[in-house]
Image (tube, rainbow, N blue to C red; front, top):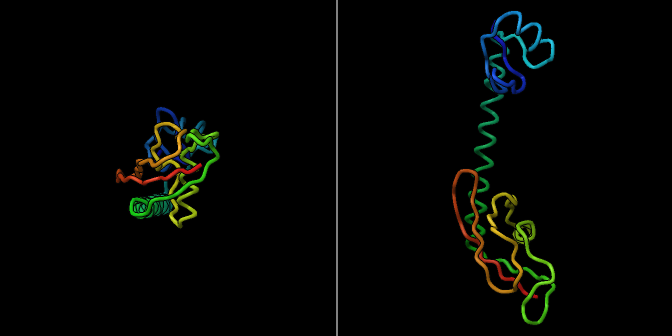
Length: 146
């Protein structure tokens, strides 16, 4: 029996795949628990369209992140953080703080794209690496003042 999986099933397949399964296993386990549906032509076509839409959306999101990385590399950002006169910060600057600073400049970049190895604890000028899910890399210059 051909089954379209509605969710990931261990040792069977991933969501959206069409699998040939024994009738008993399909009826008594997969269909009974709502993990899949009988794969008719219309269901398979709609699943293919849904998968294509997800791929297109993911590509569009990746392109948007790539453009944001390019924009961030061209424009340095300035962050203010409380600190001592010698430059030691009272609270470290993390990826979320850098993403928020970029948002204030009109550059919308997810926190996951900022590859900050460890939080910044000193005031000064820093180069922070950026990486998109598609692999595009960039560097944003961050100036931290206390």
